[in-house]
Amino acid sequence: MMRGRRSARGFTLVEILVVMTLMSVVMLALGAAMRTIAQTEERVDQRLQRDDEMRVATSFLSSTLGRISPRRSPTLAAAGGNVPLFAAAPAQVMWVGVMPARYGAGGRYFFRIALERQADRSDVVIRFAPWTPAGAFPAWGGADSRPLLRAATGFALEYQQPDGSWRGDWADPQTLPGRIRISLRTAAVEWPPIVIALRQLPAGDNGRGGFSLGPE
Image (cartoon, rainbow, N blue to C red):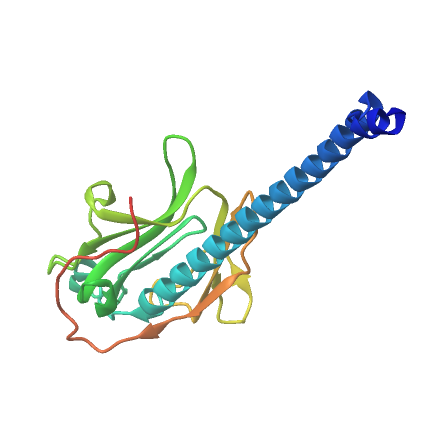
């Protein structure tokens, strides 16, 4: 009868405390592992988003800035000049190019790339407007725009000079630089420099249409 009573007794308080402690340790380990997995997944998603943003921006710049339409300034042409519609500065560049048809448009457009201040951040923005026979750059405040890089902390343009050096301005208005180097930076990553060779296209690439690169 004594042996039966001993076998019928339950767990002691010490045994229950030991089991609860072990379960707590296991739960803490599982929670830490889940947090690590979630943080890793978030970092991977951010990296993929940055890589995709870089790919889209580089592809678009190469297909527009790398294909200059040989339009001349009609004002200077009337005065005997032969100056292309191209404006180069360290913080912005303006040119006439051809909108790639794969972006839902085609034909000749005015373009400008510059760093623009938004409500709570600065974005590298491309603005564009259809070509007009007047041949003058439009008022960019009313032009269509798309962000190329959001929350940018750095943006600089350099132009390859005839001697091969790089400077933030282009001193010869009669010609175009051979290449443009674009430096972009965000708080999270500094992009590798984007170097784009400028190619002049033949005339006759008129056209109009819509365009979509990303949300405003």
